[in-house]
Structure formats: structure tokens, C-alpha cells
Length: 120
Image (tube, rainbow, N blue to C red; front, top):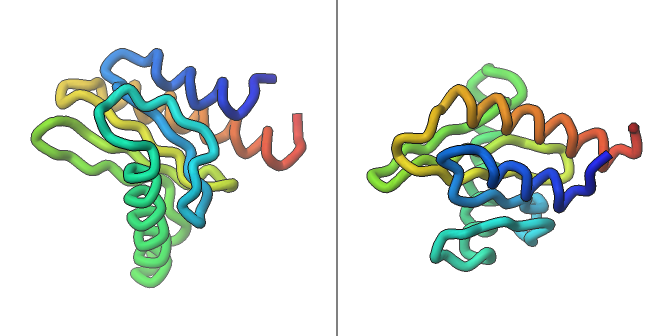
């Protein structure tokens, strides 16, 4: 099985992905493969804040456990999912294939959950 860093780096190979990062729920960077001109710590802080707020909002609005979030901006998209150990974020170009990115993100999430729970 791949390492946590390898799982995060593999997301960077998906067409349209410009960076990926795994952030602990306290905002610390666990693994990063960001190729954008933003500091890891800045992205980590934002992902931790958005993830924590979205988890609470989803539960409080009766939608159950959060699966994923997609933020769309002029310059691209940010995908976010709860990977157990923390939040897994993927930054993409505006024209990235949403379905493919989501599929790869969900696979990475499950791999990270297995790795960090000790299950193989």
C-alpha cells in the first residue's frame, strides 16, 4: 500500500489538478503537493477552517456526515473531503473534469482512511 504522501502526490497526476494537500483538523500540513503560488500554511489554514465549518453545518442542517465540498472560483475549483485524519483538498483548473476529480478524490480518501486506521 502507498504512503500518505504518495496518495496525496498521486492526486497531482490527475488532468486539471494543480495541487493537493492533506491538512490535520488542527490546520497543520500532513502532506502537500501544491504547485500553485500559495504557501502550504495559507492553504492549510483555509482548508481546515472551511472543512470544520462545513462538517458542523452539514450535521446541524440535518444532511448527515459531510462527504465533500466543491468551491468554484474564477481561476479554478477547490475540492475538499474529510479523510478521517484530516481534510484532503484538491485545487484544479477551471476546466478540470469534475467527475474524474471527484472519483480520484474519493479513492484517495478511502486509501488515506485505510492507511491511518492501520487497516490494509
